[in-house]
Length: 126
Image (cartoon, rainbow, N blue to C red; front, side, top):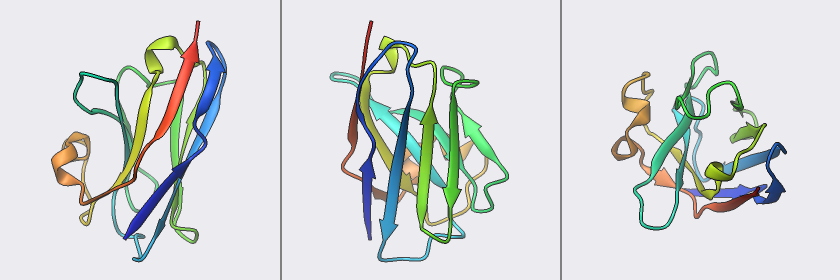
């Protein structure tokens, strides 16, 4: 199983980026897919997750209203549209896949995810 993130980069505050995470090696249509982020010296932080049907997205309070998670099961790809970016959004962003269909509570726990990508850097300048 491989997860490959793309779409990171440098953007000014208030700008937008769209992250993509392409999965290969398994059919993920029944699983939860999520995004986490990490800054140096800190633990990974939950950002967003989406159920297998795409009807139940979950967000961290810090990104709610600015970020949108979506998925295309036909392409085994999950997206994270990030708008109104702030300098505090600067981090290494990881996508992850869980082998179970997680609900709102467990989708925020990194321990519930089985596969991880290598991460893509997002830097927001002030």
